[in-house]
Image 1 (tube, rainbow, N blue to C red):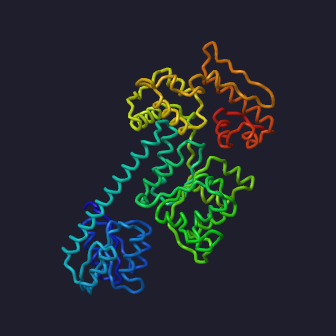
Image 2 (image 1 turned 90 degrees about the vertical axis):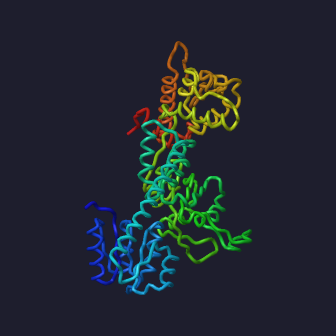
Length: 468
């Protein structure tokens, strides 16, 4: 007979376990047995079951207490309690605690089978609803994170894999690549989707106020604390906390954050009693945290706690096949917002200009450019004249600032491909910066006015050989 579902039987009486196992196995169910409430909770912690049959009266952890603990592990668990004392109060108490049903001993086999079948049906409906919600969330978020390129498809695959877990995720990438959108996608595809998604931009909060924002404080904890305040960890309890620009967190806050990740508890400022919290951390940064660890500005133990699952977002210039669909998406978005009637079909000239540009501001810059183009377009299409000067006339925009007084001339005449010219220009600048700094990437990045992560990415892309 086909296996129809998984059942966990929790009962301290061996004969009752044997009877239920024989009955349910004959119907094609996969059955696992537990002798105590504690053992049943341990079994459910290892894997979820479609239905739990739970005796109420057991030594140690009783059935009603075990019911509550299982629902903490899985809020949609289907638990049927069995009792020899099925008074009205017992049934009401079980239902109030979240039980699916209550069966009295001695029971009829048909009654058990009918109740289990109803529980299986309920479990399947819950799973279908959850899967539909995940699919809808994925569709909504993917509409904002458009990416047909192989690099972005790899990112999406990793998001799908990591979302159901509770592991901490570290998203890296340049500013404007969509790190917060990826963090939201992870949250919306997880079992925490119905709970809060709270964002903290560490770089926008003064260091002296950051701990109060994260952990909260009691009244009188410091000057100006006229009332108690709930911290964002507590606000996000049960959900996800997105720590943007994690590299900007000061050392003393890094230590407290590490404790939360290790112990899953925190203490508000001015308080002495730790508070437990169930929060999934998704962090993001546009700086090289490994380099920050080497320089001593970021804790190594915190880095490894955060980077359990690292996700690197590529800059837009490394996924140019996404420029057209992104541009069309933003045209449609701002066309609707501004009540225009602009075509999302781009001319070959405009598309070539967009694809040749290096996009230092990444997707965020592209969105701003397309919003501007929609607003100022004189007709029903985006033309070259709708684009900023640095994109519309690249030959004028690329008058480079030389390093140490040396100049680099760009020859964009005679039909030379502009993108190839830009590559040669960047490679030359990077090599000279590395020469001047003795191969030190962080100092070279400062000299070039870019993030170390960006420089490292360019070195790999252009296969620039470093000094040994």
